[in-house]
Length: 210
Image (cartoon, rainbow, N blue to C red):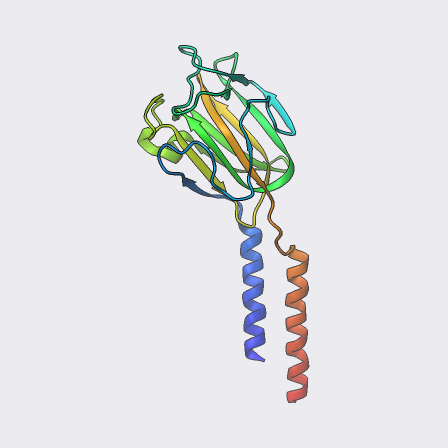
């Protein structure tokens, strides 16, 4: 009886914790890596256009570098995304065709004034500036791999459906965006049914004991 109640209580606590989870776990891939290594992820390399369900805002897909405007991310030689363009300050929004639990991108010449934000159903989940992610290396260096990193955002049991890239100056350059459709996990309603079953079983055993 006590064991069943403890299990039910632990399950309720886990459910509450899962519901409260929102901010992703951030990790940096090894220096020099330019693509994701996450299994099941879909990669957008911008070689055939934007690639998202919808793309809007101040951005351009470019190749090479233009002095004072954008710079090819270190270690790459293909088309990539630059935000903003053509204006010097702005943002671009990219929506997915399904909720996802992972996002990654190769962020070139990271600047402190670059930022990435994640949304679910138009509600902001979290925002990170370049300095939040690489500290002192958010200095815009175009050739140092410490300032050109593949960054991973793992949402666990949480999810997102929109990514927004913002920069208050030229520019936020990135390539090889990757996302993974939300993994199959028990829905909250399913977990509640399991907890209800545990509590009912505990009640039956208590009545039998009496």
